[in-house]
Image (cartoon, rainbow, N blue to C red):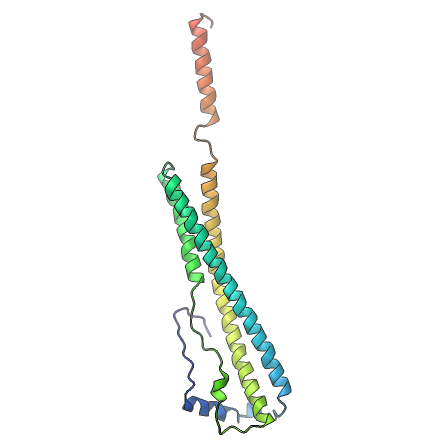
Length: 208
């Protein structure tokens, strides 16, 4: 499923949806599944992977928030002390920092996902036996696997935006540092002034 940041999904947990889920447990795909130990173990492992990917996404969004703070701070510093800079250089630095903020905001986009829910199998018509438990665990493991792939795709897109923001932020900081530590008067001009002063003194004393 292609990740769309504007897609909002609501889980359908109504009675009809639960009946369809219960009917799917009778498909040939689940034929011969009687022992719940392996399906429940697989479900536990898949949920652990989902938790790990979710924590990774949260950490990535935290880095994006920090980048927004750093970029805003540098923009404020440039606004206070960068008025003497050339207009073109100042505009390029501010533009790169604003791009970094924009990329970070996009990477922090939060969407609502169709998270698998065990409530879909909350029906009194389902038998309470090991084959039913095993089939429910298999169905949930498949659903969580699809959700895990969605998270992986989302992390790849967020990561690209965050890396782009870091690159343009670095360019802005490097440009600002280059301008800040570049002397306003070139050394050659200083040498010319000293040479001109020395020549004027020689002329006053009659020396060539």
